[in-house]
Image 1 (cartoon, rainbow, N blue to C red):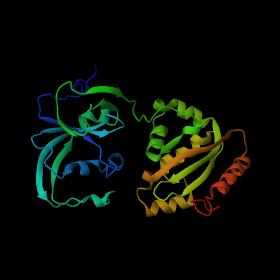
Image 2 (tube, rainbow, N blue to C red):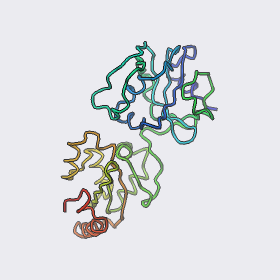
Image 3 (cartoon, rainbow, N blue to C red):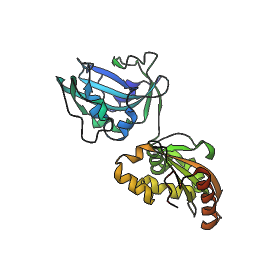
Image 4 (cartoon, rainbow, N blue to C red):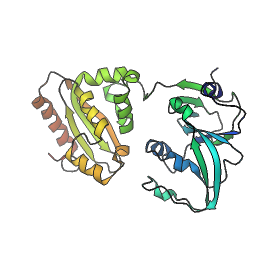
Length: 282
C-alpha cells in the first residue's frame, strides 16, 4: 500500500519532526479558489484557535469530495502571534473573512515537495471533521498521484463544463489531456461562456484548422480571448477568470466556412438572449 509518508520520504520528509496534517474545507469560503489565486497561505496562517500548537511542520491538503484530500504543500511552523487583529493581504478575495482576535502563524513553504503539489490524493479517512490531526507514519493511504496539470478524463462534448483554471491546465498540459486536445481540435462549433458571478452569458464560435481548441487556447492565455466586453469586464474585476465557465453548445464540421459557423452562432445568441441580456455586443 502506498502511504503519504512513504511518498514524501522520497523528497526528504523526516518522520521524527513534530508534524500536523491539515485538511482545509471551509463551508464559508472557497479555499480552492484562494489556492488558485495565490492567497491560500495567508488564509492558512490566520486561525481563530491555536490549532497548530506544538507542531514544527504542517502537511497541508485541500478537501475534495468524500473523504479524499489533495496535497498542496509542506510548511515549517516558525512562530505564532496572537491573539490580535491583523490585516488581510491587499486584494484578498474574501475580505469579509476578517482577521480579528485570532492567531497568525509564521509558515514557510518547503519547496522540496513542489513536484507533488496539486497531484497527490490521499484518503483522509472517516474523521473529516477532525481537520487537524497529528501525523502518524503510514496512517494515510495514497489513492493516486495525478499527472502534472491533470484535470479529468474527456467526458464527451455534451458534458464539457470547464472553469477557466481547468481550461488553462488542459491547454498547457497536453500529455495529461491528449484526448481533450484531439477532440476539441477535431470540430468547429459554438460555445458558451458563463459569468457565474452575474449569470451573464457570452456566445462565441470557433472555426479554422484547430477548431474549438484553437479558440479556447486564446481564453486560456488572455482570459478575455480578445472579446471587447470581456476585456472591459476584466479591467473592472481583476479575478474575473475565477468566475468564468466554458461549455460547448454545438459541434460543427471543421470544413464549414467562417460565415456558416457564425450563422449558427447567431441563432444561439437569439435563443439565449445574450445580446440584450448578456455579454454579446452584436
